[in-house]
Image 1 (spheres, rainbow, N blue to C red):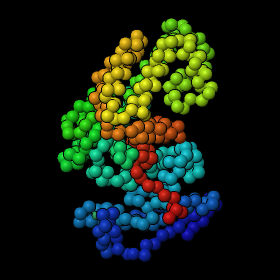
Image 2: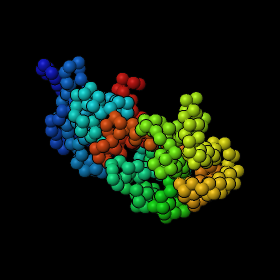
Image 3: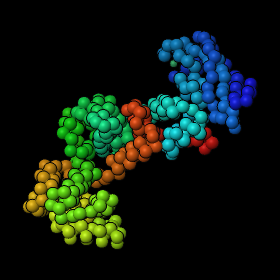
Image 4: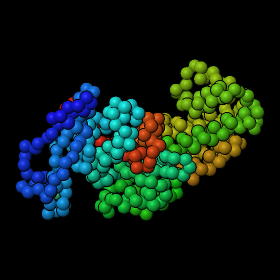
Length: 386
Ligand SMILES: [Zn+2]
């Protein structure tokens, strides 16, 4: 052991003399060895390093490999404890705090996460999927997308790849065996024709449905348009920017979540512009489809809603009614099959959090690793937790 003002270096010796390949094979003879250091958890203000002449082994299956050691993952330059501490922290706090606390570079944090996720992700996660959902997220403007596939039954993300086309979603199915694909019964998605085509190619037996999340997004966007037209086209509303933003949020909020103040703002807006009032009522009626209507009545209820929206005289909602009409079968399928928003909302809110904590903007690779770490079912424990 050698100690300086700011570091402690500990020389390690292994009790077992046999050399172990990461695959499990052991041998009495080493191929060769070379000195290596691993960064371990700090001892007070001292950085701690483990030092050991790491051996290589000639494995009959793997060829010449670096030996497996108990304190670090293969190819790592940090100990398992150090890495686990980093992984635990990145799911809870921002990147600057992690790199300051652990006294390592930002890119070290990223590379630890990327490599550890590779080692820790369940390699059998594609085997038993019955109800899956696919979504796209834009990770860099413009036109940089990730396709994300999740399992509705566990809420876990099971596959992430770049792009958002037919190829991206097909790539997921190509990772599965024919037997695994046969198990897929339900695929939920947004309105994308590319995803739809990929699902038809690979899992023709599966029922396709529209995630309520995306349908509600369409409805809210139409409502936004009616509201902004009230200010800029019809000029029935004049509001200062902060109040205008507040009113837009209130309009989007579900009726059951409105406070007294919200309700009074809503009354002011809908009294000044009747189209906003009609649009808001149609939006609430649409929400009821997911909240209050029994699945067996959903198709009839939706049909009535489409007729009403179509004849309401508001452009944005006439167009919306047309879009919804085209997807009515998939919209009702989601209700019948009990597809909730939990998965898609979980993905979206986690990605917002990852971005806010400063992990999202670097590369598709590091964002993918962070999504897997947070939503891929990887269990991270502190070295001190048992
Ligand atoms: Zn081996």
